[in-house]
Image (cartoon, rainbow, N blue to C red; front, side, top):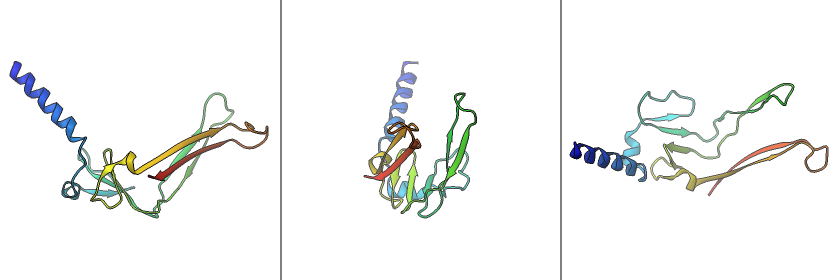
Length: 131
């Protein structure tokens, strides 16, 4: 019983450490790569490609019981270059991997209508930048 517990803890520790190491180019190449919009393989790891120039739909909504009517729209920003994502890892070429948050950063800002001068519209701004 004690040995089984030790082996289980060791196995869990090793699997947790594996997520701390980026995939090698060979490991990533062995995974299926799907483009955004394609169906992901069920129950399997895969690399997700956000291709340059392709629309990446982002639903934006404002809702709640404070409002007379909920509002929603879809924006379609497009990347300037390909971006690959595998779990928490990102890559611009699908071969060299870093933590995605080391490659891309951003910020979110919200300003209420009239906040500055009593009449300007409110803004919700989301920015993404290469680091």
